[in-house]
Length: 539
Image 1: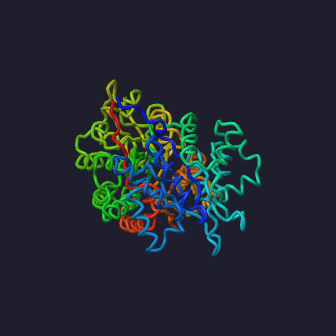
Image 2 (image 1 turned 180 degrees about the horizontal axis):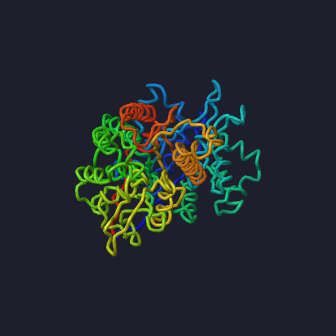
Image 3 (image 1 turned 45 degrees about the vertical axis):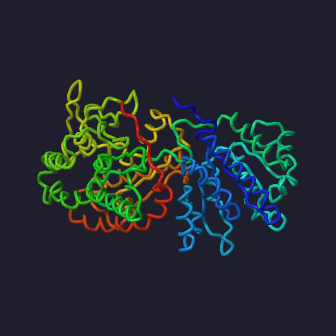
């Protein structure tokens, strides 16, 4: 059994830049520190300051040449520094030895100084901060980033180390804030922190800091170096899944055109409800997003034929057997736990008592109840929308069970996906990233129906139900994850597109294609960066 490295899973924010007068010393320190962190199993997060690019690159490339991982170094930059052809070319070179994260940040006029979102992102994603050098303190303290980044980490209760012996902004901050060594929360006394701050011996500083970090309770299990556990969450919405499929297909096409692996290889878990379940299961079985989109385009009119109004008053509006037969042709007889390339969470409802349930792959010893369920049965269990399709019946290991559409309680599957990941996979909440894709929504004003009784509410009740549920799930997800670990991709339409409107498939496809193209840069930076999901254990 391979022994675990002392800094495994620990992410260290290296905050700093090298002023011209001490550039050689600071660059040497950064190189030695980074090399040591990499060798001990940790990773370095840095805000891509040009003055430290070379020592970080040298350390990362040397580590990779020795068999190390690219994800050991994460370079973060604001979106406004990733727009020109020259900047894009620079990023592609950096991806050879580092993970590059492009973070949206508001520009402050022409000064381009407002990097607060980027700094918050680094603070949120890191366990400890080490500060060295920095600029602007003597001329414009408000523009000085190193003290700001240190304070952002300390405010979150995370430990910091100050290396001020080489001058720069952090030295100025230490001079002005004499109490700083007592506020670093790193387990060392004020006197020791002051000694580190004033020391100029590179070897001694590196040894002292790294050894102390090893003693701190920062190690994160089940999480690799700089990579978070990644969830892809796909909403329900009937045929509006064509929009979602088109978005995924565009991302996959653009990723592969640049020589990258398929989209699904980047995700540890995929959650999908109703039509999102059909998409999620298809992706997990290795079906390309483009082929899934073709399924919606070609089979959608068969699943949801027109002129079923009379039938709708007497029984379910559409034939469940048709959907089953078509899914059988695509999925075959495969079982989700046997053949899925990633973990799955598929919300559904037990019909007998209306109990919320999630069909999951057997990814944990205590999550094996649906180990033998077929891909077809799992998809049908989540997509049996009341009044649209009959309940889905699965011949379970004990007795037949009936299921209804998971959209009844989790049309947006973010929350059940998070619960599964934290509770059963033991992934810390601050080590989870979620990419959430909707099925469009409308800009409907429901107040117009308020005073019109049942006649007014009946046509819009389902739309209101899904809109409120979706919004509630997103609000809670934002509260749990914050903007740094959650990205939502969707589009609002002036007019509501019905769940079974087959005539709108091509329009939805075009919309999805455009949204996928427009969002690709942000999605690629945060989720499709070449850091693939490791193989998962099946029980």
